[in-house]
Image (cartoon, rainbow, N blue to C red; front, side, top):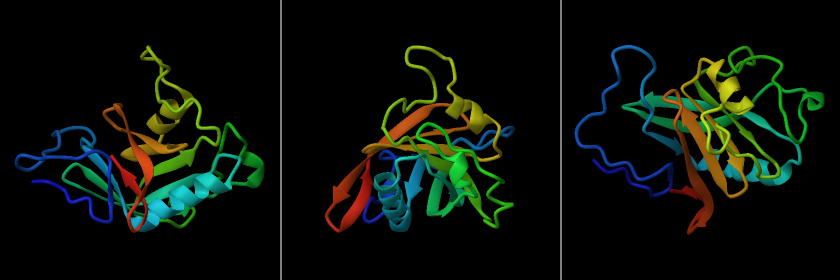
Length: 172
């Protein structure tokens, strides 16, 4: 089965032969991260608009190893808790009133240090450590023209944020 990339975003072209199965124990394996057009527009706008880190709640669903983000809602963050290198929420996405949260997304305004492990090592960054403490299946960061993300398998993946024919979109 091949996923169409018409107006949505797919983090990599995923070709599935048969149904994806989840392990019997532990979180489901995430094969792809898909953003709706609205989520893409918000990510592109937020990245260009802020010199400090922003934090959002990715709201969507998980099906057959694919996380589909329908929208990104603002996390509850005090302006004093958002700097160029750090953002700290006041409460969880659920306590802020958002349901259906599948993950968190934040940006790195200078598009630097966009990794979950220090290069050439297996040493986790503070972004990886923060993700491990959440109940969500994915975490993502916007870094310049790309989105870097990770699932519970702790394998970092990324895709480019680029212009497409009908507007802004993400392209693998």
